[in-house]
Length: 424
Ligand SMILES: [Zn+2]
Image 1 (cartoon, helix red, strand yellow):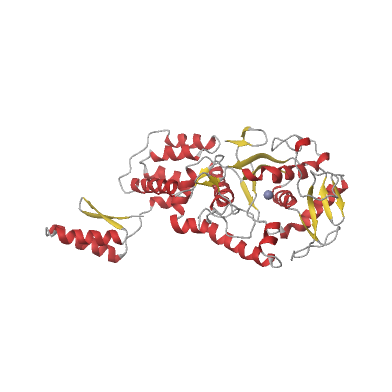
Image 2 (cartoon, helix red, strand yellow; image 1 turned 45 degrees about the horizontal axis):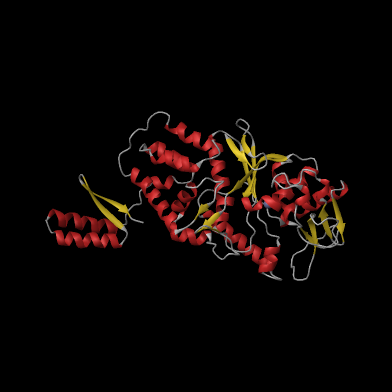
């Protein structure tokens, strides 16, 4: 299997099974309900990959962290950030559980990993890669010649991050920040009370659970710079290989505009699931290649509804064996950079129930094979309609059909009786 890596700018081959394949994805910052685009990055793509790699016989470990220490959380709930982080962590579990794809193997929090982060910062200071400024600690960007390689910037063109006139160099970024008024969480450290910077969290959490070198690091394209550039600088300065392949997924947009809380066009995963249901949402995510932007709109979601119904329809008709090599075509699409739009096109041709169920199950969509059973009162209505038709009372039959439709069901006349189909 091959996947595209932002670092090498080409598709990289995975080692042969069983691997192991360690995968780390930057998880949510917990200060609000997760939005639907972020959910794809942290709760869909990682778990799809895990399911597919398992079918190949790989041993996989998926780590998705929870960022529960961050400026965004302090800003959203001054003086009460810990409470907000707790609540939003619970919302995150509730909402992403509804996707039905299982959970990552390990979900560490930044707060529980603070001792590991402090140890890493101490090592960076000892190696001359970091320095103190009062109660802060900064990474010395000039000491890492490869800085800018991931994001494709020249070292001398890197813009200032985290302004502080006392820094040696405008490009240097914070590893540790002294406690400020209004910040209700802090930890003791060799540099005084404070809290870790955002980037050191991920270096420490990924290495703690996957070791100093692992296969895949992922996240949204918006994390390439500075977040992932800084993670690489921290870990590789210490002589660790760190992640070999860097997967960055495209961003979700709405009517062509990127989905962001700051733009005010973000849709929460909860609202998307309430309105469209998990199957439609997962089919929608499959319609885009993971590296490309994807537009979330009534139109594109409507198309996903039709696709999901198309799959359900296959299971209402008799199974027809697929030609030989059908599964191999699906595998070829997924093994070449996990091309889900191609996989979707291949599966839409299938009328073989067992094969299609197996294919859909990779994406958590096996439920599309199950017919929803009609409740007793719906069956009764359909029986009365059948009897009315048999008695040539067509007007009454039409009234009953309308009643069924209003309840969200269609009675189809088939040989020997009727078939009840749920309409969405
Ligand atoms: Zn991260």
